[in-house]
Length: 268
View 1: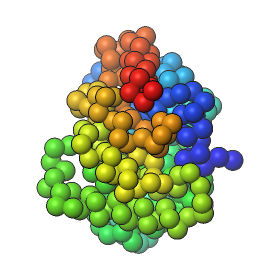
View 2: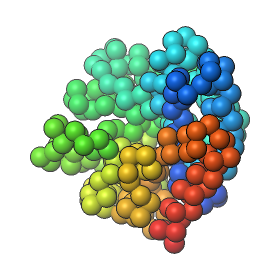
View 3: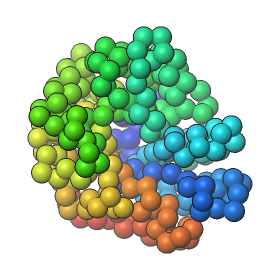
């Protein structure tokens, strides 16, 4: 069975897409939770041919309470049926047994992703339970290195992001040889000038690039994040796909196709 990194890379090459479709269903856009679920699943199925993976943002499901957990489980199941790797964006991080519990919760089971975003700012040793669980299940973790929001500089500036990147590279170097390791990195697409630097610092890490579309990043900004052949990075668009034109699924498909084509044009 392919690992998350292998599955994403294989899908990138086979379908010629580097797009990660974010599914962030906002309760206020719908009549009720059933409407939210139906629309989210419709967008998922319609956009699947243009996606290398999907990225449910956990907060939007959690905000719905127990019903939201059920919807998330259905979204993950539908993605797996479509052959789409699932990267759950929950940004978990904690110490010791609590980190282990978070890892089991969101890297194993029907409601979980094959990959999970994680926060390293409690110390690098707190990554170990997440890494161990991911590796045992053929999954991956994506470590926050340099996030897309302007306020990231408060804690991620002055070389801190680069220090985290060096640790990501060290962790991947400990794994058996292969194209990409199980430890990826979140580097905002909004940091166009820095992408080539982070690509060089983490040669075996898949890079998740949030910020395409609604946050202002453009496909033309992202070339430095990719290896030759267009692998090694996933450009994420959420609102710009799911709500491209209100709740029009046809508009979501056109947006996903457009992002895919723009990325391919840059990397051609």
